[in-house]
Length: 101
Image (cartoon, rainbow, N blue to C red; front, side, top):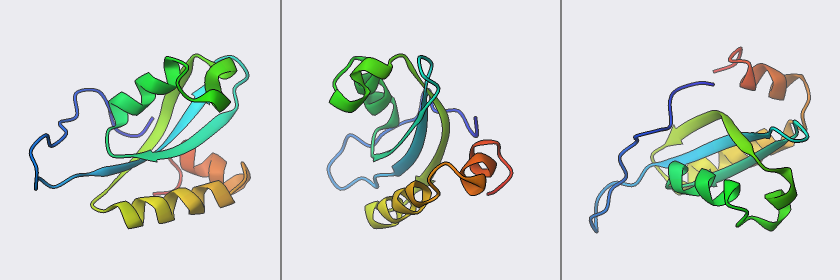
């Protein structure tokens, strides 16, 4: 896993700078991956593991294997779309194995 996601500080005040995260989860049940984007990584991973995402409910438990930080939502969603376009190929494997920055 690249980086450590626990204990990140999220801005609670209005007008504070919000970071966005593109993340990859792996199911410990079927070992398939899920790619998402959020402004609160801890909360979102907890929601996924609590079964609040219908498409992942039967694939729990999930672990975070990779994430990237972005200063704005547009860039984060653009990157999420790019990673999804890898479709689990060589570029995707390199990314989660830390071979591509």
